[in-house]
Image 1: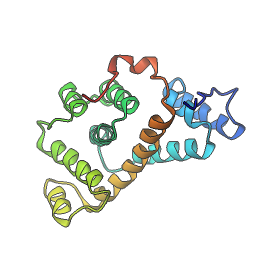
Image 2 (image 1 turned 60 degrees about the vertical axis):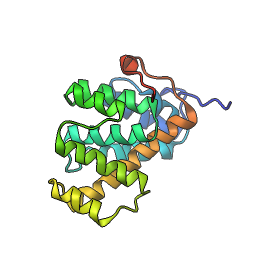
Image 3 (image 1 turned 180 degrees about the horizontal axis):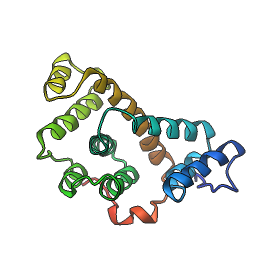
Image 4 (image 1 turned 30 degrees about the vertical axis):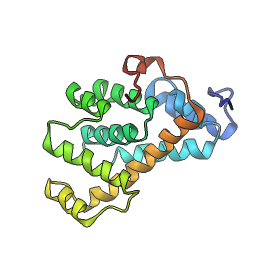
Length: 184
């Protein structure tokens, strides 16, 4: 098995050092996933940029976590499920029952959030070739065409992190340990 390094600010490639400094300022420490991404400064830079842009979409923080957890469940990303479960509960105050439903891949009690999760699943299953009736149903529950396109951005964020996790298998950060997850 090929081993991928988890870099710190001193050991990282020169072009990743400033990016890791930014990660440490933002999260209080360098998340292990970003420490692995530092192998490729372009990947780390792209991930951080897209992640920041994702937070500026018209979705609420709770909706963003619903999207991220739905994608990470679909992609079977144990690191990202743990990380977003932690962020959902500790930072974004997502109700615990919503996080647990997303971690189990089950329906949400909130109809609008459930519709959001189902739309994201449809996007994933159709590889982006979503049907007009799915888009219309999504808009009918209160979302917009702009948000259909913003989901594409959020999907890109998760492709970068989910695939990096699958390839490099970074160690789960201690902060996420109580949210450890494996698909049943």
